[in-house]
Amino acid sequence: MKTTKRLASALLAAALALSFTACSGKPAENSSSGEGGKTVVKIGVVGENSEQWEPVKAALAADNIEIELVKFSEYSLPNQALADGDIDLNSFQHYAFLNKEIEEKNLDLTVIGETIIAPLGIYSVNVQEVSQVKEGDKVAIPSDATNGGRALKLLESAGLLKIDPEVGYLGTKADIVENPLNLDIYEVEAAQTPSLLPDVAIAVINGGHAVDAGLIPAQDAIFLESTDSSETENNPFINVIVARTADKDNEVYKKVVDAYHTDAVAKVIEETYKGSYLPAWTNQ
Image 1 (cartoon, rainbow, N blue to C red):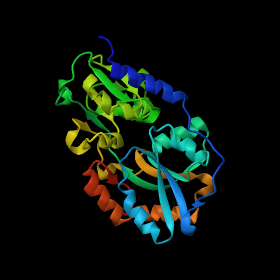
Image 2: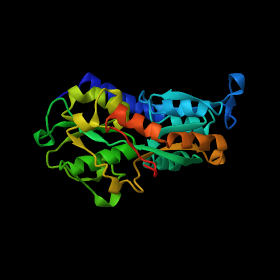
Image 3: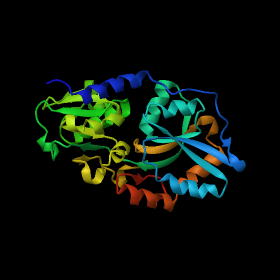
């Protein structure tokens, strides 16, 4: 069967993303001054689902700190932008993705606070449950190493294949040891996975991209990653706020983290995302 145009385009986008880097500029100061002497903190995010930052902005306004969200379209960009000084912080990724980026790109970045955990889900518009996936079906998963490995582990949890246990959450297609349905697995840029739902039997979609696509993981996923509270300690998929290591003790940035770790933010997360995101900081 010929690959559809949407799927072919997504595969091309994934290939292009590997060669695309963020525009770099002169490293910025720890923060910049805005109008009226405000301290402006630029925070890199991915996607449109950033409502939880509204109470943070409101709380910090009293300290004359202005939060500016800088939106990126792909996961491959914000860490380099932070390292280059184009932004002050970023908040879009989990520990596993950050650690992989640090290793591969030799970045000097440090976690300064935890934010949410967003369960990965299996979605479909062509089947109603995992048991309906059949021989040779197409499956879309994220192409980046950590989310791709996480997706394969989720497919394993759903009973569709088995991964070499030695690779943990960093497996690739080459680490599949059992694929009884001979599933045809396509690796595409994570942001492309929701658009491929008409063209594949199932797609593994990150929580943020699912929300951006109008999906509610707790309701719309046909199989959802566990977020049981007993499993969240030391979880590599807890999302984080990241700074350049040289700025990890910056007092303004500490205030940003403190303003995020509040009941007001937890309430917005609960009411807006309806279980798609869960607060992950230790006081919740």
